[in-house]
Length: 278
DNA sequence: AACACCGCCTGAGCGC
DNA sequence: TGCGCTCAGGCGGTGT
Image (cartoon, rainbow, N blue to C red; front, side):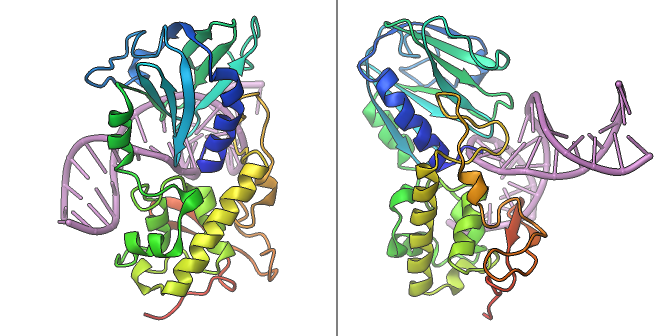
């Protein structure tokens, strides 16, 4: 469930704990969650041991821990979390811990992921990171109407499928796709190519506003997402459609409908997001 | 080439 | 109370 707002919330919280610190030691408890790259294997060195953290960067849902001589790319997948623990502080949940970094100030960074859809990708440096991120579309926090249109405006796919495609724009998952489509009054099954310039402007602006607002609320806690300090977010209390199938639309009070689209549960308001011709 | 679909994986929630 | 089933979905791989 961590989408862009949850990953950005984690990034913002980890910056003060990690940047400037040196990684004293690393334990990789489940080697299979780590995917080695040439020049940066899943060795302690590849996992940043002995290196000083310089910055935390993000593109879409991917988080990059940038150190002196290497970069560690982190995907949280469905259930991943990354938490900073004080010296001697025990993790809130001790199971499914896959990697633990001990920093030079005694604090620890813990990667936990019950379902293991997430993982770690050690990279040798900025060029390798740029190459990976070149496969992603623009970050959804900064997507523009023309930018979105350029990347999917000729496609026959349902607009929701396009929004979930990280090569179109990076960072949107099932929750915020439904929320942004509701906010812009667009039926999720609308073929992307049948949307006009103005629709794309409205949609891109709804995406940015929806994501920004969720970041302000610390992200959405749906199942077990917590930020890096172990705190849940509150954005889920503001969802207009996600998880509200059959409940009244917050705008028109009619029943919200549920369909399956691109293999995902999809909730929308048939009245506020009418299907259009052509 | 573009797009649909499967399978990975665990825990929550449900019906009986 | 407990069991077994379904569902949740990001993403890489495979099929059409």
